[in-house]
Amino acid sequence: MRMNGPALKRLYQMRIDPSMHIAVTHTSRGELINTTVPFPLHDGSFSMHVRHGDKGIEMELIPFSAYVKKAEEYAAMNMIMARKECFISTEDVKVIEEAKETANAWISPNTTSNQNWTWIWSDIPRINGGPKEQLNKFGNRTDMTISK
Image: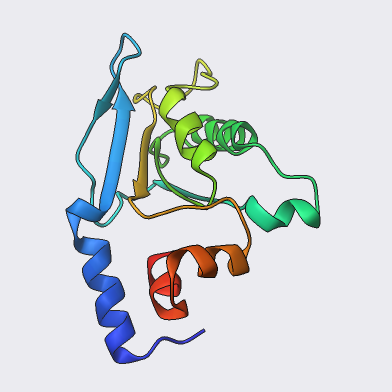
């Protein structure tokens, strides 16, 4: 897909608008706290697209914990380069709630110095359904494409 100039400009403005994004992490005692949203993400950060919704018709859905486990393994193997900071893209609100509960899923003796994850996501409406349900709930295709 290639967006036209006005759409790209709008998308960029949404990406740099700090009020459109949320970032959380955990204290050393495991308490959830808000933190600043970096733009752009730091080098070595992760990005996860956890597709649920209508994908469950085609295949068994992969749980969020499996994504985190793989990212933890990668961070442990690449501790100089990896940063436990992750942007999450998903239509499933439950994934965001699970991320808020995930401070550290698996810690290796060789893991990165930042043991707790920082989770970042866009503050947009979500529905755990397919494109048709999302279009019916959230409006026109242009707004849905740019914000999702």
